[in-house]
Image (cartoon, rainbow, N blue to C red; front, side, top):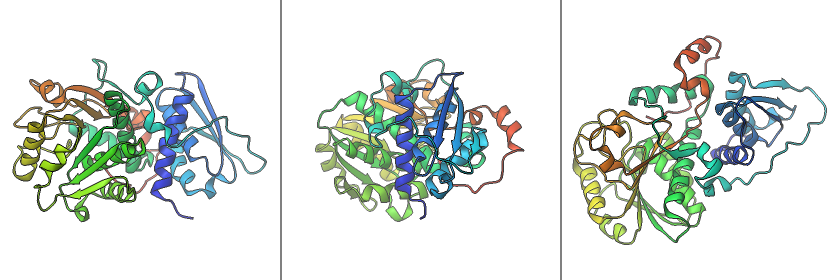
Length: 361
């Protein structure tokens, strides 16, 4: 049986829920016995390690039979969290109960702040290049699939959207470009559909030209008939009608890879959304803003911006707050050593080579 993205991402979401139900204590121990079918517990263990708990995982003999467990155990091996691969005997029951869909409905208050929180002066501020490096080290150094990083970003964004809107019958329009920022938006669309929101996803790029991770999220979303998908890659004439029937716009056009100034169809879309006066939630950065340089020309005006992993210098520049609205930081699940370059360089010589599973730039 091969790995499926649906099962991998379900395990990642459920792992967040487990950690929320059993929050890690910094400096304390977080133990788990893991067997076949317990991928969610492995994902939870990685989150617990990220938040400072001493994580001890024992793999039972049948764990390697599960391809999801094999994928999610590898980051823990490299973190030194797996202390035993048992060779026989009955494994003890894991003390967790989880609902794979519950992570989408987690409130920002309380333990949800482990995953998404209002930006504060204590937040790390990393350049676009440094942010890409943390993603690369997570993927290549700790064998963490890029789709897991994207899913974690999307779960945090969905939580922040629920916090902003509440449980009303909001009609949401996701406007998506073609890069990994589009993938974040399409993953968020899935989460909003799961919560019962009416969602339309408008693609400004031909689906065959999406980045690999965005294409995978498009495939997953297309399997959800509750979500309307509108192809605007050839023309954006339908945008006006979509805006009229929407209450909220999720801006997933451009992310940290953007530089320069808006032009062409992207400029037209940003201007149309700004004129519509809707509630706008921006993924990572308002489209048109530079992650390093901030406001350099026309850009999306957001009510709330959910930036991923860490703040970027552009979010703190002159005039930025007029475009970003309230800024939240959503964790993407990067292992702790990834966020400390000196520690990572020390570990790197002991880490095995791995295949690049994707990237987020």
